[in-house]
Length: 201
Image (tube, rainbow, N blue to C red; front, side, top):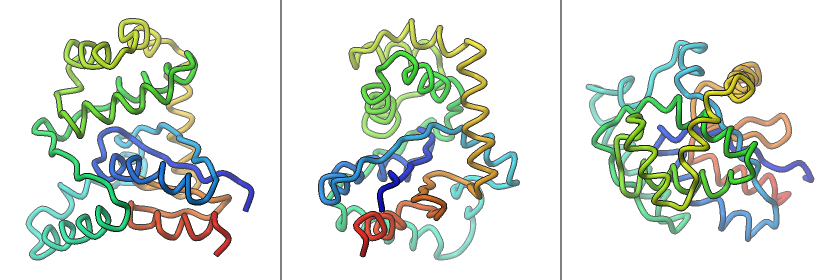
């Protein structure tokens, strides 16, 4: 299949982070590049009446344990390191996701994505605190002041809203979500099927 797989992500999702970590090796194996699409998970939850797994599954016997087992399998299968739980979770990612759109417009998107995921799930920080976020992004070699200022522009805000609304219209209800053409896949575990599909298996 020629159409590039799309990865709909929000930095607030640890499973989106693990997917991001697994994607480079998939790209190498398949020779196919993933297209990263920033969406606002809070906006998707609101539109679909969904909640984060941490909320939705709290108190369900055996569910958390199974999720941990599933994550272990994923880490082994894709050869990635586990995330470090962010003690400030849930983090409001509105400004981070707007800045991701700003980074696209400014031509520093890949560097920004790497940095934002790092400061959320490798060396976790309270990334919804503007001062903390600015300092963290600057430490990763980004012009944080410029990106955070640009994130307030009307065209940036409109693009994030558009991405999020389009995601819901296409069937998304959370993150990570993947599309290969019109085929939708949800959750990091589905990356194996995404890889099979783009490999033509």
